Length: 305
Image 1 (cartoon, rainbow, N blue to C red):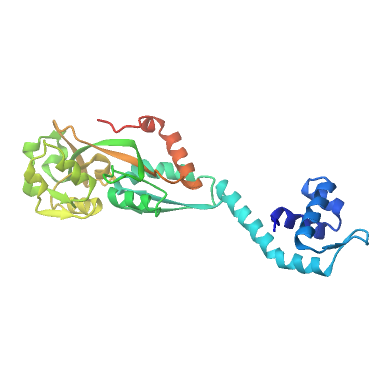
Image 2 (image 1 turned 90 degrees about the vertical axis):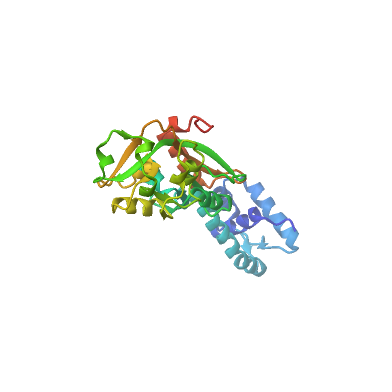
């Protein structure tokens, strides 16, 4: 059979409009083209669907039954097309977004606010985690995109640098370091440090930096996340080597960021995009908003050195 939705649309429109001429006007085609569609439909079925002895032609009993049987098909197509147009026009949809916690306040939140502005039918689900886990979720299609540190196992990802910040010391406001312009690595005691899980990007940065004393990498206290680490710093349990934006995550006056003199160590945040599948409409629009909000940050396709 060569029956398609154009044939069904022609049949239903004639039935709704009451005549071939009115149906042709409604569909925006010439009457002869509409008549040819109905003729093709009747040829494939092998029986007339309209009684042409009446004026205007009326549906035969077979035609009425076929109309009823196909109404759900045509209605389903109409609903699917409507939803497709709504998603394409971002009238509806959901953005599944991943982010490192330290990327949320300074970078992601302003862009997300701009993206959602004027799009009441669009929602966002934000998943925060470490870079490697976010990268895996983007690769597997669980997240549309993510903003995080560089992922090492990233064959299925495209990674674009968007922001970099220096590594320094996080200390409670009551600590002697809190009022200093900067401190030296030699001023920091290894037994004062609170470390991070070995899988985190911040820990990997410290491991890869020759300037960091090796005993700094095996602290007495460790946290699974930056948030837990900052809570421990705030409580006076110790200090932490962290990116500036991570330390300023909550703009907590009880936690200070202090430069480490002579330490040229930076954390870079990347936009993680799937390399082997197209972006959803919501993700594409978010990336466009990000690029518009921070064009200078996205101008360089290569990581800063």
